[in-house]
Amino acid sequence: MAQGGMASGIVFDIKEFAVFDGPGIRTTVFLKGCPLRCAWCHNPEGMSPAPEVMRSPSGERTVGQRYTAEELAARLNGQAGILRDAGGGVTFSGGEPLLQADFVEAVIDRLDRLHVVLDTSGYGDAESFRRLLAKVDLVFFDLKLIDARRHEQYTGCSNDLILRNLQILAGSKRAYVIRVPLVPGVTDTAANLEDIARVCRCLPGLVQVDLLPYNRAAGGKYAACGRRFIPGWDESQPVNADTAVFARAGIEARVL
Image (tube, rainbow, N blue to C red; front, side, top):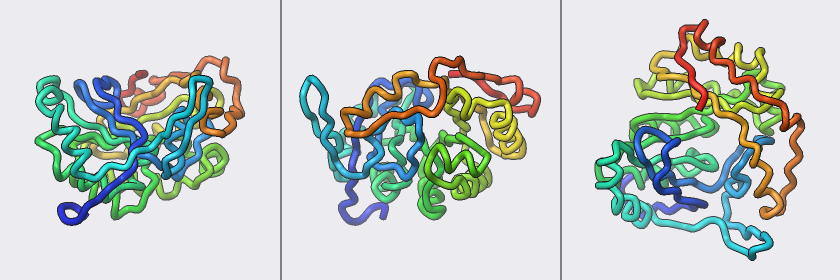
């Protein structure tokens, strides 16, 4: 659904002057809705695909705004000159942008020569993923846990689809970065990092691996969303940000 029709989607945040979401200075669009339920998610307001009310001591606010592709592209194109001059562009994140692939594709088709990053968990149907890969310049692809049982335990979903889409990405000739959120005692274990290095070792097109330190503010927004944050790990434990395991596999890795 690229050019015709009035594709629309629901966005829960638009962050301007973002510097950690791809090259240069960027505008990041956070799309609402995610099939995963990662126990450490720091954007719980991005889980549900529908608009919802967040309640806090400072009052109530509705999170989730519907845009047509034309409306969102017009807003982003209004910043195009600044973003291009800063070597940046637009990043589509979430939530999970693959859940709104038609909308994202329709927005990209209307952008004015902007560099586009797709930031994805990789959990989505293969055809949607292939369509978006053809439209973007760079992909950030999350890898959380390779062990299937632990992946389901901590995210609520199998990782079969994610690993299959990773192979599609590796064969796409599109540049990509693997991102690993470091959760103490969960994703940062020596065994899991070894597993990720083993999976990445054979992947063509991989630029590097980014290790993302644990966000200790992760639980802050759950009560406002009417959800409970119950970490099944010791949040005070320092994370194991081991880049050496990747270096041994010939993979460039850095801690963000």
